[in-house]
Length: 79
Image (cartoon, rainbow, N blue to C red):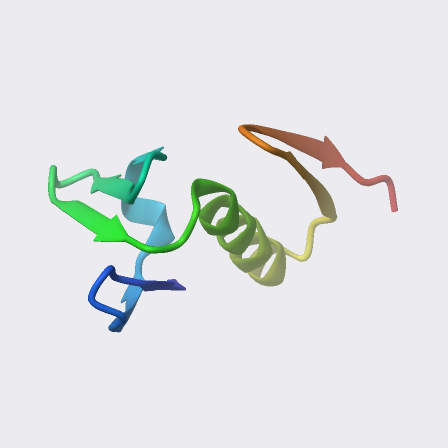
């Protein structure tokens, strides 16, 4: 689960396992696997970072995240 902020400044918690797509623009639109769309203030890069941090916390695996403007790179970290 990750916390995001809706455009009305209310915080909500989203099950990141159910996210299908994240679209950037003036607002960020998260489309859930159910088809529901959430409009949030968080940038797509922030959401991806939160998802990776969540998955890292539950799996214990090492993943480095490098965010460069519109592109997101994931790099495995050797332990």
